[in-house]
Length: 413
Image (cartoon, rainbow, N blue to C red):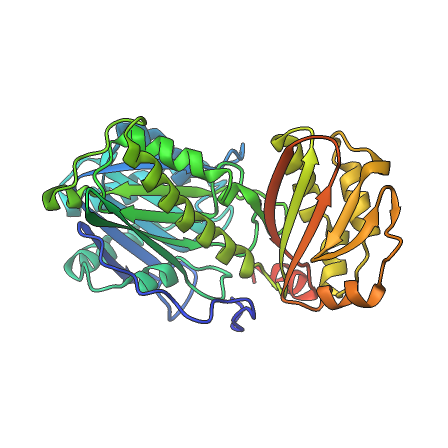
């Protein structure tokens, strides 16, 4: 694991309020890493609602399959997460490992397997020694509630260089409810329906189907709008838990999408998800630059997003930014290859506030010095106007450096 913290890491962490009904414990099970926590147990109070979004990878991991089958039940009591081993592409052994993991946790919790959620992250193709969870889960349950939000985020890290946490609070019926989230991810990041791993908790009382609509609705503009290296993980999982503890403080349950409080809660959830997704990009393996790609003037929003991702996933665009080279020709290339409607002679491109290309050629007032100054910033905005319609989209990515190759060249060793 890289020991140098990303230069794009947050300078400080927010104060994370307590979420009533949620408790964490972390432990070292020695799954892959020595001398660090690698297991997280989160328990939630009885009656907690759950929603989830998952990878669309056709090689999804055993824990993803387990969670997908249980989210429709809408109820949760515990979440067990390990790092160091993804339990992906592990065949029948992988299925047996999730069944044993869930049995160990449900036995300790005194609830059904259907209320246990599992996630694993790390190396693909190695069997997960689930029996190691036996002693650990008892130990975790005994020390439940001792771990804080940062501890929880640290326990799920793999090549991450810092833990990722975010929080938002809103007033509902005059009472404050909170939403806290943790996430992990630094490589194999091009989510398709979810992120690497993210777990979000709220004390708001929200019915499971409403919770699912809320989560699904906010995924496209957050976790599905980031890319580090264009690779979709086998393990991508986002789970959202609502303990409903605020009901005892006078908040009525949100049971329909027409409830005006739905939008207020959804906006707050969206803020947490965008914050976490940006932190993942800022911790992109070897990253030195945070890049926002804004595409406007497209024929549709979907078309704009495809073009934005074509730019954000281009190794040539990303290496130019790593080298602080204002090579706008690479952006032209990425727009052209996206397979979406575009007209060369209507295209305009900006680096930051500097327009570098206009109406099919270099901007007449182009200044290499001004464009180069933008490329030296830590945060770089690339804006493209296609001049065709009203469609627009933003995605976030990072540069591609030699360190990315170094980290992934010896990932398994």
